[in-house]
Length: 261
Ligand code: PLP
Image (cartoon, rainbow, N blue to C red; front, side):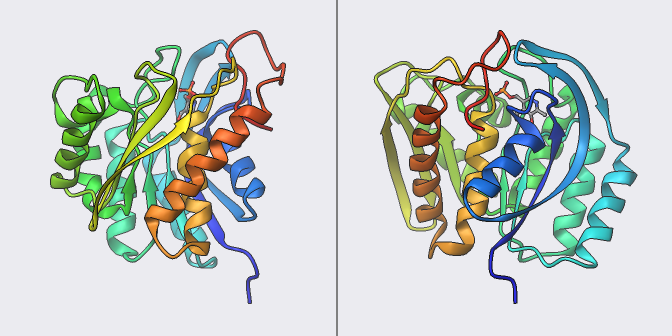
């Protein structure tokens, strides 16, 4: 019998090790989960930004998934960078054929430095993916794109948008308020039971690369050992706050460094 949860990340590679698959696998390890990884894209990237994206052909993403699940049983799945509409549809089709997975979707669209990690024409396909996931974890700009609306400016606006994302079919939403100013990092959690604002103190650090990747992976890694998604999300946020604090002194590259190692 497996002693530790088996988690899969479906995401892109970040050679600088701060975000993407590399961040996901480190997060799984840090939280005591075994990590599998299906690659959707290679990026050429440093801490200073992305210079290129080389997508994996969607049919090969499908082959990686089918080969893996034929052999390995998964306790939770995290989805990150999907790059193209065709890859989003491939992953949607995979989830439809293997229902019942615990799935966290980080709807990655643009890197912090401004590079596109999802094609413009793929946003509709991401909306169609929402009903197939257990939790979606957009930041404020990503929520606005998914809802085809304005960015929320405060927690009340975030609440309304989290509800609207639930109406699009996402069972649960963690809308991340890190982009809003303030001494505290407030995220809005919405699930079948209601809504809650999760507040942690804001960590001052230059090392923020891969924050979203790490949080969504932490939720997936923790879910098999928690009794609810809400508890997995709240504990993942606490873990991330500690990781940001612990990683504040890391000196990797000349840009925003990785959240943790
Ligand atoms: N590169 C890859 C492969 C990613 O998956 C992501 C985020 O999800 C990023 C880069 C962007 O990370 P950040 O916004 O922290 O720069």
